Length: 237
Image (cartoon, rainbow, N blue to C red; front, side, top):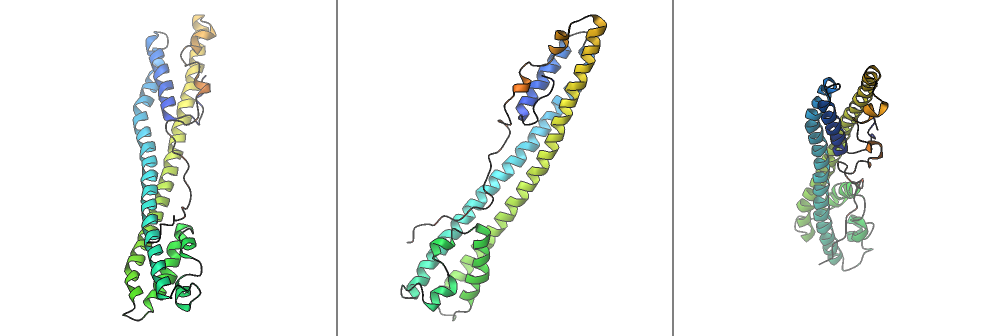
Protein backbone atom coordinates (compact mmCIF):
# COMPACT_ATOMS: atom_id res chain seq x y z
CA UNK A 1 0.00 0.00 0.00
CA UNK A 2 3.04 2.32 0.17
CA UNK A 3 3.83 2.18 -3.57
CA UNK A 4 1.45 3.17 -6.32
CA UNK A 5 2.07 0.97 -9.39
CA UNK A 6 4.21 2.84 -11.90
CA UNK A 7 1.68 1.91 -14.59
CA UNK A 8 -1.19 3.60 -12.76
CA UNK A 9 -2.66 6.75 -14.25
CA UNK A 10 -2.08 10.24 -12.91
CA UNK A 11 -5.54 10.42 -11.36
CA UNK A 12 -4.68 7.39 -9.23
CA UNK A 13 -1.53 9.16 -8.04
CA UNK A 14 -3.61 12.26 -7.31
CA UNK A 15 -6.05 10.29 -5.16
CA UNK A 16 -3.19 8.66 -3.27
CA UNK A 17 -1.58 12.04 -2.57
CA UNK A 18 -4.87 13.59 -1.49
CA UNK A 19 -5.58 10.71 0.89
CA UNK A 20 -2.22 10.76 2.61
CA UNK A 21 -1.99 14.56 2.80
CA UNK A 22 -5.44 14.77 4.39
CA UNK A 23 -4.66 11.97 6.82
CA UNK A 24 -1.32 13.48 7.88
CA UNK A 25 -2.82 16.94 8.28
CA UNK A 26 -5.57 15.57 10.50
CA UNK A 27 -3.21 13.89 13.01
CA UNK A 28 -1.24 16.03 15.48
CA UNK A 29 1.54 13.47 15.68
CA UNK A 30 1.94 13.28 11.88
CA UNK A 31 1.01 16.74 10.58
CA UNK A 32 4.63 17.85 10.25
CA UNK A 33 5.02 15.25 7.49
CA UNK A 34 2.23 16.71 5.34
CA UNK A 35 4.15 19.58 3.66
CA UNK A 36 5.92 17.48 0.99
CA UNK A 37 2.59 15.95 -0.01
CA UNK A 38 1.07 19.41 -0.33
CA UNK A 39 3.95 20.35 -2.64
CA UNK A 40 3.40 17.27 -4.79
CA UNK A 41 -0.30 18.05 -5.03
CA UNK A 42 0.58 21.48 -6.38
CA UNK A 43 3.00 20.02 -8.93
CA UNK A 44 0.44 17.44 -10.09
CA UNK A 45 -1.40 20.05 -12.17
CA UNK A 46 1.66 20.80 -14.31
CA UNK A 47 2.46 17.09 -14.66
CA UNK A 48 -1.07 16.31 -15.80
CA UNK A 49 -1.01 19.25 -18.23
CA UNK A 50 2.21 17.94 -19.74
CA UNK A 51 0.71 14.48 -20.17
CA UNK A 52 -2.47 15.91 -21.69
CA UNK A 53 -0.56 18.14 -24.11
CA UNK A 54 1.54 15.20 -25.28
CA UNK A 55 -1.51 13.03 -25.81
CA UNK A 56 -3.40 15.84 -27.54
CA UNK A 57 -0.47 16.51 -29.86
CA UNK A 58 -0.34 12.90 -31.03
CA UNK A 59 -4.11 12.67 -31.54
CA UNK A 60 -4.23 15.87 -33.58
CA UNK A 61 -1.20 14.80 -35.62
CA UNK A 62 -2.89 11.47 -36.38
CA UNK A 63 -5.98 13.34 -37.57
CA UNK A 64 -3.90 15.50 -39.92
CA UNK A 65 -2.18 12.43 -41.39
CA UNK A 66 -5.56 10.76 -41.97
CA UNK A 67 -6.94 13.78 -43.83
CA UNK A 68 -3.82 14.28 -45.95
CA UNK A 69 -3.79 10.57 -46.73
CA UNK A 70 -7.42 10.55 -47.87
CA UNK A 71 -6.96 13.61 -50.09
CA UNK A 72 -3.89 12.13 -51.78
CA UNK A 73 -5.62 8.78 -52.29
CA UNK A 74 -8.61 10.44 -53.89
CA UNK A 75 -6.53 12.51 -56.33
CA UNK A 76 -4.28 9.55 -57.15
CA UNK A 77 -7.28 7.35 -57.92
CA UNK A 78 -8.77 10.04 -60.16
CA UNK A 79 -5.44 10.41 -61.91
CA UNK A 80 -5.24 6.64 -62.37
CA UNK A 81 -8.65 6.66 -64.04
CA UNK A 82 -7.57 9.53 -66.28
CA UNK A 83 -4.32 7.82 -67.23
CA UNK A 84 -6.17 4.60 -68.01
CA UNK A 85 -8.57 6.55 -70.21
CA UNK A 86 -5.69 8.19 -72.10
CA UNK A 87 -4.19 4.70 -72.57
CA UNK A 88 -7.40 3.44 -74.14
CA UNK A 89 -8.17 1.24 -71.14
CA UNK A 90 -4.95 -0.77 -71.56
CA UNK A 91 -3.18 -1.21 -68.21
CA UNK A 92 -0.17 -2.68 -70.02
CA UNK A 93 0.27 0.30 -72.32
CA UNK A 94 3.55 2.21 -72.26
CA UNK A 95 1.77 5.41 -71.20
CA UNK A 96 -0.04 3.88 -68.22
CA UNK A 97 3.02 1.98 -67.00
CA UNK A 98 5.06 5.17 -66.95
CA UNK A 99 3.08 6.06 -63.85
CA UNK A 100 1.90 2.77 -62.35
CA UNK A 101 3.61 -0.61 -62.20
CA UNK A 102 0.67 -1.77 -60.08
CA UNK A 103 -3.02 -0.92 -60.15
CA UNK A 104 -3.83 2.51 -58.63
CA UNK A 105 -5.97 0.73 -56.02
CA UNK A 106 -2.81 -1.11 -54.88
CA UNK A 107 -0.63 1.99 -55.18
CA UNK A 108 -2.73 3.95 -52.67
CA UNK A 109 -2.61 1.12 -50.13
CA UNK A 110 1.14 1.35 -49.78
CA UNK A 111 2.55 2.86 -46.59
CA UNK A 112 1.83 6.55 -46.86
CA UNK A 113 5.45 7.72 -46.89
CA UNK A 114 6.30 5.25 -49.67
CA UNK A 115 3.23 6.37 -51.61
CA UNK A 116 4.28 10.03 -51.29
CA UNK A 117 7.84 9.33 -52.37
CA UNK A 118 6.72 7.34 -55.41
CA UNK A 119 4.24 10.07 -56.29
CA UNK A 120 6.94 12.76 -56.20
CA UNK A 121 9.83 10.76 -57.65
CA UNK A 122 7.99 8.75 -60.30
CA UNK A 123 4.49 9.98 -61.09
CA UNK A 124 5.18 13.73 -60.98
CA UNK A 125 8.53 13.35 -62.76
CA UNK A 126 6.93 11.36 -65.59
CA UNK A 127 4.04 13.78 -65.87
CA UNK A 128 6.49 16.63 -66.30
CA UNK A 129 7.99 14.82 -69.31
CA UNK A 130 4.69 14.91 -71.23
CA UNK A 131 4.15 17.47 -73.91
CA UNK A 132 2.83 20.81 -72.59
CA UNK A 133 -0.67 20.28 -74.04
CA UNK A 134 -1.16 16.76 -72.70
CA UNK A 135 -4.35 16.62 -70.52
CA UNK A 136 -2.65 14.56 -67.80
CA UNK A 137 -0.26 17.43 -67.01
CA UNK A 138 -3.10 19.07 -65.10
CA UNK A 139 -2.41 16.56 -62.31
CA UNK A 140 1.20 17.67 -61.71
CA UNK A 141 0.59 20.47 -59.21
CA UNK A 142 -2.27 18.77 -57.26
CA UNK A 143 -0.36 15.51 -56.84
CA UNK A 144 2.88 17.27 -55.95
CA UNK A 145 1.15 19.51 -53.41
CA UNK A 146 -0.85 16.73 -51.78
CA UNK A 147 2.15 14.36 -51.55
CA UNK A 148 4.31 17.11 -50.04
CA UNK A 149 1.60 18.01 -47.52
CA UNK A 150 1.22 14.34 -46.53
CA UNK A 151 4.98 14.02 -45.96
CA UNK A 152 4.90 17.12 -43.78
CA UNK A 153 2.02 15.63 -41.78
CA UNK A 154 4.00 12.42 -41.25
CA UNK A 155 7.02 14.40 -40.04
CA UNK A 156 4.82 16.42 -37.69
CA UNK A 157 3.36 13.21 -36.28
CA UNK A 158 6.83 11.79 -35.68
CA UNK A 159 7.75 14.95 -33.77
CA UNK A 160 4.54 14.80 -31.71
CA UNK A 161 5.28 11.18 -30.78
CA UNK A 162 8.86 12.04 -29.86
CA UNK A 163 7.69 14.94 -27.70
CA UNK A 164 5.21 12.68 -25.94
CA UNK A 165 7.94 10.14 -25.23
CA UNK A 166 9.99 12.86 -23.54
CA UNK A 167 6.95 13.91 -21.54
CA UNK A 168 6.31 10.32 -20.51
CA UNK A 169 9.87 10.00 -19.22
CA UNK A 170 9.42 13.16 -17.12
CA UNK A 171 6.10 11.86 -15.77
CA UNK A 172 7.68 8.51 -14.87
CA UNK A 173 10.35 10.34 -12.89
CA UNK A 174 7.66 12.30 -11.06
CA UNK A 175 5.81 9.08 -10.21
CA UNK A 176 9.03 7.57 -8.87
CA UNK A 177 9.50 10.65 -6.71
CA UNK A 178 5.99 10.31 -5.29
CA UNK A 179 6.59 6.66 -4.42
CA UNK A 180 9.90 7.51 -2.78
CA UNK A 181 8.13 10.13 -0.68
CA UNK A 182 5.47 7.60 0.34
CA UNK A 183 8.10 5.06 1.40
CA UNK A 184 10.18 7.52 3.39
CA UNK A 185 7.07 8.94 5.04
CA UNK A 186 5.94 5.46 6.04
CA UNK A 187 9.35 4.86 7.63
CA UNK A 188 8.96 8.11 9.60
CA UNK A 189 5.48 7.09 10.70
CA UNK A 190 6.79 3.75 11.97
CA UNK A 191 9.38 5.64 14.04
CA UNK A 192 6.67 7.85 15.52
CA UNK A 193 4.52 4.78 16.20
CA UNK A 194 7.41 3.14 18.07
CA UNK A 195 8.04 6.29 20.11
CA UNK A 196 4.38 6.81 20.96
CA UNK A 197 3.54 3.15 21.53
CA UNK A 198 1.12 3.02 18.59
CA UNK A 199 0.60 -0.16 16.60
CA UNK A 200 1.66 -0.64 12.98
CA UNK A 201 -1.95 -0.16 11.95
CA UNK A 202 -1.63 3.51 12.91
CA UNK A 203 1.13 4.02 10.31
CA UNK A 204 -0.82 2.01 7.74
CA UNK A 205 -3.88 4.21 8.17
CA UNK A 206 -2.22 7.12 6.35
CA UNK A 207 -2.27 5.27 3.02
CA UNK A 208 -5.30 4.03 1.04
CA UNK A 209 -5.53 0.29 1.41
CA UNK A 210 -6.21 -0.43 -2.27
CA UNK A 211 -3.33 1.55 -3.80
CA UNK A 212 -1.40 -1.55 -4.82
CA UNK A 213 -4.42 -2.80 -6.75
CA UNK A 214 -4.76 0.34 -8.88
CA UNK A 215 -5.64 -0.34 -12.48
CA UNK A 216 -2.89 0.39 -15.01
CA UNK A 217 -2.85 3.79 -16.73
CA UNK A 218 -6.53 3.94 -17.48
CA UNK A 219 -7.28 7.63 -17.23
CA UNK A 220 -4.16 9.18 -18.67
CA UNK A 221 -2.96 6.88 -21.41
CA UNK A 222 -3.56 7.16 -25.16
CA UNK A 223 -4.45 4.14 -27.33
CA UNK A 224 -1.79 2.67 -29.53
CA UNK A 225 -1.75 4.03 -33.06
CA UNK A 226 -0.48 2.49 -36.25
CA UNK A 227 3.03 3.51 -37.26
CA UNK A 228 2.24 4.19 -40.90
CA UNK A 229 -1.32 4.17 -42.29
CA UNK A 230 -1.97 2.81 -45.73
CA UNK A 231 -4.27 4.81 -47.93
CA UNK A 232 -7.84 3.77 -48.42
CA UNK A 233 -9.02 3.51 -51.97
CA UNK A 234 -11.88 5.88 -52.82
CA UNK A 235 -14.39 4.83 -55.44
CA UNK A 236 -13.30 5.71 -58.95
CA UNK A 237 -15.64 8.35 -60.33
